[in-house]
Image 1 (cartoon, rainbow, N blue to C red):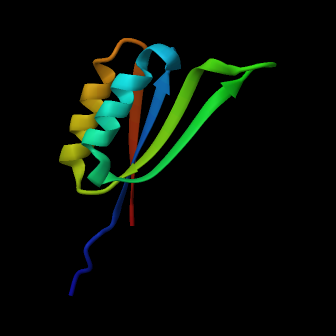
Image 2: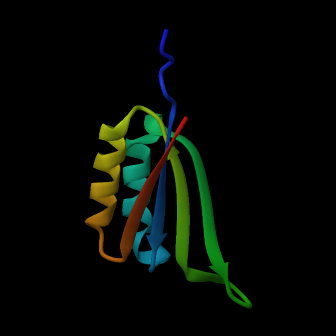
Length: 89
Protein backbone atom coordinates (compact mmCIF):
# COMPACT_ATOMS: atom_id res chain seq x y z
CA UNK A 1 0.00 0.00 0.00
CA UNK A 2 1.48 3.34 -1.09
CA UNK A 3 1.53 6.14 1.40
CA UNK A 4 0.47 9.62 0.40
CA UNK A 5 3.31 12.10 0.22
CA UNK A 6 3.06 15.10 2.51
CA UNK A 7 3.70 18.56 1.13
CA UNK A 8 4.97 21.57 2.99
CA UNK A 9 4.24 24.59 0.79
CA UNK A 10 6.21 27.65 1.88
CA UNK A 11 5.78 31.20 0.60
CA UNK A 12 8.41 33.82 1.24
CA UNK A 13 6.84 37.27 0.94
CA UNK A 14 9.21 40.25 0.70
CA UNK A 15 7.59 43.63 1.31
CA UNK A 16 9.63 46.74 0.47
CA UNK A 17 7.27 49.29 2.02
CA UNK A 18 5.52 47.73 5.01
CA UNK A 19 3.63 50.87 5.99
CA UNK A 20 2.18 51.36 2.51
CA UNK A 21 1.32 47.73 1.75
CA UNK A 22 0.48 46.32 5.19
CA UNK A 23 -3.30 46.76 4.99
CA UNK A 24 -3.70 45.03 1.60
CA UNK A 25 -1.26 42.24 2.51
CA UNK A 26 -3.16 41.65 5.75
CA UNK A 27 -6.49 41.61 3.87
CA UNK A 28 -5.19 38.85 1.59
CA UNK A 29 -3.73 36.89 4.49
CA UNK A 30 -7.10 37.07 6.24
CA UNK A 31 -8.85 35.90 3.07
CA UNK A 32 -6.59 32.82 2.97
CA UNK A 33 -6.41 32.41 6.76
CA UNK A 34 -7.83 28.88 6.69
CA UNK A 35 -4.89 27.86 4.49
CA UNK A 36 -2.13 29.46 6.58
CA UNK A 37 -0.79 26.96 9.09
CA UNK A 38 2.28 28.94 10.16
CA UNK A 39 3.10 32.63 9.78
CA UNK A 40 6.42 34.19 10.74
CA UNK A 41 7.03 37.90 10.26
CA UNK A 42 10.51 39.41 10.17
CA UNK A 43 11.37 43.07 9.76
CA UNK A 44 14.38 45.32 9.84
CA UNK A 45 15.03 47.18 13.04
CA UNK A 46 16.62 50.58 12.78
CA UNK A 47 17.99 52.49 15.73
CA UNK A 48 14.69 53.96 16.91
CA UNK A 49 12.00 52.29 14.83
CA UNK A 50 11.10 49.39 12.58
CA UNK A 51 12.52 49.60 9.08
CA UNK A 52 10.43 49.78 5.93
CA UNK A 53 11.21 46.28 4.64
CA UNK A 54 9.60 43.11 5.89
CA UNK A 55 9.66 39.40 5.21
CA UNK A 56 6.83 36.95 5.87
CA UNK A 57 7.29 33.19 5.82
CA UNK A 58 4.02 31.31 5.36
CA UNK A 59 3.42 27.57 5.58
CA UNK A 60 0.25 26.74 3.66
CA UNK A 61 -2.14 23.81 3.75
CA UNK A 62 -4.93 22.88 1.38
CA UNK A 63 -2.91 22.06 -1.70
CA UNK A 64 -1.34 23.95 -4.56
CA UNK A 65 -4.41 25.89 -5.73
CA UNK A 66 -4.83 28.26 -2.76
CA UNK A 67 -1.05 28.69 -2.47
CA UNK A 68 -0.78 29.71 -6.12
CA UNK A 69 -3.80 32.02 -5.85
CA UNK A 70 -2.43 33.79 -2.78
CA UNK A 71 1.04 34.12 -4.31
CA UNK A 72 -0.41 35.59 -7.53
CA UNK A 73 -2.54 38.13 -5.64
CA UNK A 74 0.38 39.19 -3.45
CA UNK A 75 2.70 39.49 -6.46
CA UNK A 76 0.26 41.94 -8.06
CA UNK A 77 0.89 44.43 -5.25
CA UNK A 78 3.57 47.04 -5.91
CA UNK A 79 6.52 46.50 -3.60
CA UNK A 80 5.65 42.88 -2.83
CA UNK A 81 7.56 39.88 -4.19
CA UNK A 82 6.70 36.25 -3.49
CA UNK A 83 8.86 33.15 -3.86
CA UNK A 84 7.52 29.68 -3.19
CA UNK A 85 9.03 26.29 -2.54
CA UNK A 86 7.67 22.91 -1.60
CA UNK A 87 9.10 20.14 0.52
CA UNK A 88 7.68 16.69 -0.13
CA UNK A 89 8.19 13.60 2.00
